[in-house]
Length: 118
Image 1: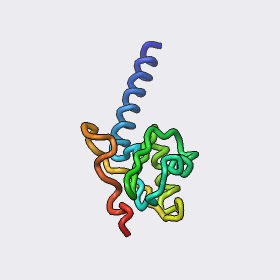
Image 2: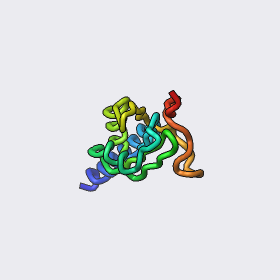
Image 3: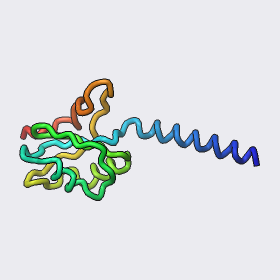
């Protein structure tokens, strides 16, 4: 009984460690490129409805970021929504590049090149 509990505890700790290592390259934050300039937070919320809980939406001029609670939700959104039409524009939805969390939460840049300047 004690050995079984010890084994389960070790398995749980190992699983947590492996999950953290595997998700290191994937942020739960996605980059939005080629956003229409009149896009509003509520428009983005509606566009991402059904892809999990959103922590934060940060819109800039022509691009933005959406941060999810869960990595899988971010993956699903990127897979399903990249190059879909949003308010008349075909937008880019990519995983955001990791940033150091010491600065502002919205910094760091997007998914490479698609910042709405085409």
